Length: 369
Image (cartoon, rainbow, N blue to C red; front, side):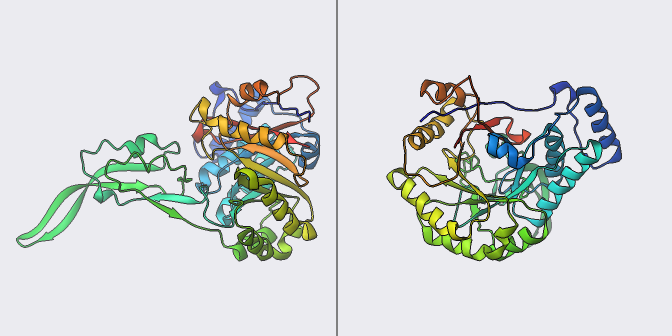
């Protein structure tokens, strides 16, 4: 099977970066001036046309990242940069922030509107968890490796005072304050193993299906991405049935799943058979090699490449685009070239996923037709 892959990105030059809350009129003026200086892409194709042609660019804000200020700013900037889709948490405030950023960008330049995608899960999933700990359990002399290793700046610790009642009166003692900034934590898990006192806990959650269906119907959402383990079709079917007629409002339905070995294709076929009777639009399979690891280094991309190789050899997979994710980074292209899955001529498919700046990495994707 002949596959074509291209890695590219659209971003503003480093020296022109604008920082701060872009909602203020002063900062919006800075953005307008920036646009006049560097320009923006001239886009004529709709997101649907980009998907069909393979010229699709998607920004992932994160299934659990809920910092609405950053999300609005990201949505504004990447709408100006020309993305086709913005993927975010299935939360009303987050979706509003995305749409606010999009409309602010369109007020600056008359651009077509990118699709808004929300991410949900049918069971426990690495993308749907938060770190949690009580900072008062941490000794003052801790080197705070959790704060250092967090790629989202979601942990902040400062010395403070705790007032304790003792037998001879009130006593103030120094303690650490702060902890996890919940809305910024997106569940990468890097803080868990580095805590020398094993104080950090994992809090997992599943998005409420009824609330998600209501959100789809009322909040300008164009696509849904369902994260699943691929092992329990019952959970997937319950979620799909729970979404009900809300799926008729969508333009794209994506399913994100890991490589579960020999059962991967049969799981995909089972899930497609569940969706097919009521599938109103295009569908896409996101192949999640090594979740949320693209910025770690060269080795992180090995699993995603192996997943791509496996899918390239399979003939009986269900209909739908295939998107490679999870560990994809600047080293992915070299790996794909070595496996014969990257062609630099006659490019017909460019499928890219962009993670926001707090990861400082662009994640590429591959699409099969």
